[in-house]
Length: 116
Image (cartoon, rainbow, N blue to C red; front, side):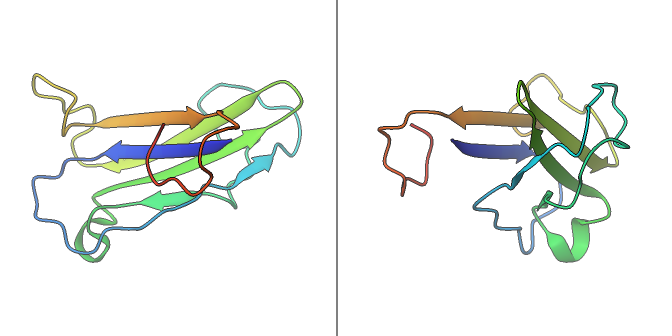
């Protein structure tokens, strides 16, 4: 399974050096997971950091994304740093959004760089 994550974190500031993330590590859950918004039962070691301008925006507009699994579930967690959370003036395009796309087509080209 290939997982694509697009984080729309709009800061209104010209980007410098964006992070480049090609893969997300999906880790086995270390034990039972309670879906409650807390991270105490998460293994955060395989997180993916996303920011459109690392030098100037990492402490203002950024995202840590994590994924874990157990025998029955896939768990995803997004931890945001954002000075203006949920700022979506009339549209989610360019606003505060997370687009998670799961690709489960076993026949898809494994070297693809876009969703199928």
